[in-house]
Image (cartoon, rainbow, N blue to C red; front, top):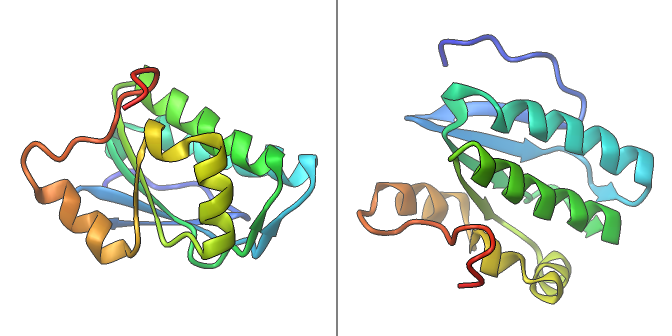
Amino acid sequence: MTAKTPDFENIKVSMVGDVAVVEVLAKEVRFPAQAQELSYELGLVIAQDWAKRTLVNLSRTKYFSSTGFAVLAGLVKKAGEVGHDLRFCSLNDQLRVGADIIGLGKLASIYETEDDALASFAEPGKDAPSFGEGT
């Protein structure tokens, strides 16, 4: 990573090749203020030139409130607005049910593991769904 990332409280950012891997550190995202902080930090990352390909890893997170899911949907929209490719991975069963309810998988690709998601970036023609297309 050529740019220095700010110190984050809710996420950890690392680069794997040209993919910005963002690990959400919170075990639970229950409250609006917490979701707002997470949204702010994720928004800072997705706006960066070095984050044109971003993977959000949710392996540490066991619970998201509806506000938390709204943050993820909003992040997909922001990524689309700046032309960045955003994908998600490592959702536990409970998070996956919530993601399915809001249709997150229609907005962005969701993978079982970080390795699967990283491999998908290398596959030609394996683009994530575009926001608003409903694919």
